[in-house]
Amino acid sequence: KPLRYYASDQVHSCHRKAMEALGLGNRALRRVPTDAGLRIDIAALKAAIAEDRKAGFRPACIIGTAGTVNTGAIDDLQALATVAAEEDLWFHVDGCIGALIAIAPENRSLVAGIEQAHSIALD
Image: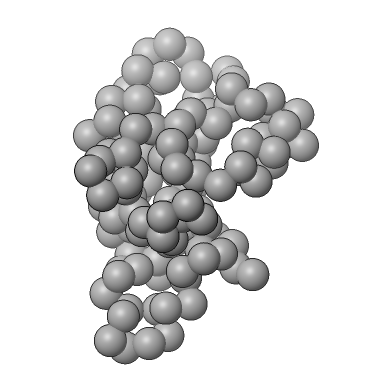
């Protein structure tokens, strides 16, 4: 079964390039619509996972964003961690823009859930 990865439609282009570098192709990354705050829409994500399973894909990973490049939007990382656990998927956080705000006690709540990630990208 072809693998499927999920991220918001605001995800950085490096993730598309990673899919291509791995030989999976651009279509392996399913871009999920965002809500009014430009965060991944959790209901749409759940629907996409169910739809892909039914279509014969093998969901593998949810990519959450802790600060998008274009707007700084931060996905609901706690909700994404929950969905990943329920669906038995890897949970990765692209934290290149905002993950380090977790070290500031007054801002830690903005990235709550990041500690549940299986992997985090920083730069």
